[in-house]
Image (cartoon, rainbow, N blue to C red; front, side, top):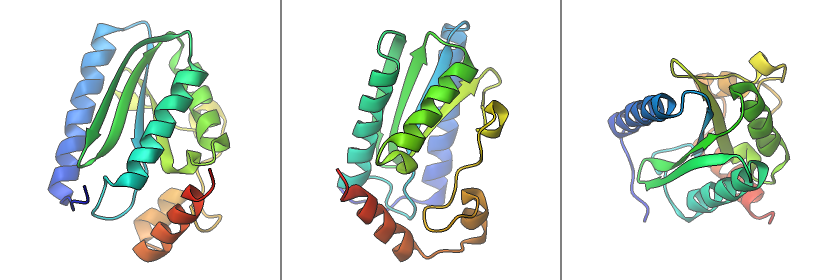
Length: 167
């Protein structure tokens, strides 16, 4: 199950995900699109831990949008777990509920649930009045630590294991 993926693999998967988002937005122009991915640093994007987080994220989205899911598609890929949900809500409302999952679920910090607006582009947390996501290990904005590679892969994976030990 553990296979390393290259940067080229990850970029190709991202492009494929954007194409799928465009298709879904075109098919449901009056609905919101959620795209769930698992935050998993390093060259291994799919293992038992990442699949558990992805499945938990799917369950959380199904519960949060119980009566408004119009379509769902789950992809368990070597480049990472991803799921698409078309929901009967505005993109802003969908993003608010998605952020609530990210902020309250025990493993929510390991989930990235984007609400994708036409374009396609994900709405940011700040666009709906919420603060940026914080780093897994410190209180700085996550994107700053990620860009600067402030923390080692071993530190990040250790923190992920600690989070996953909480059921």
